[in-house]
Image (cartoon, rainbow, N blue to C red):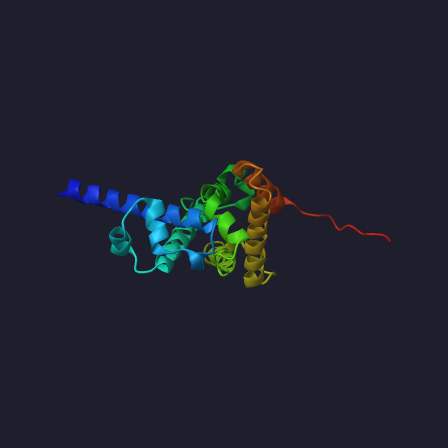
Length: 197
């Protein structure tokens, strides 16, 4: 019985993955509103019945793609500290930062939503997720003399700014390089420099 269920689960996952890949591929060439369910199933080499077993509209499929990416983003953000009783940013190695691995893994999707009008809300959603994670998980390590909401918002937009620049440069750097750069930025303490005219 469990083998039959496992086999069904694998089939469902495989079908859904094919539909998601098909939609992302099509969105690289056509506006979302012009893509039909027939286009999606033909690209995925599946029938319409398979699509309607899992989704009612193409928007449902796209929303599930976004949910998958967001969930993976949360996991990647939390990875450096999720199993730590005591988390010290200063002692964290750059290799612990896995958010860029996550972006690289979903490179097609991130490129699509950053470079097109695929989801005008997606960039805001990513920043909101990063901001809320920082406030929820790391609030206790924020300095007390700085407004925590403003600091979390600043950090989330800074990280997403790095991601956008990485995408603009067609991922010319490795995820490890990007993690190292973020690590340097986190630890950078500028001196009070006086600029002269």
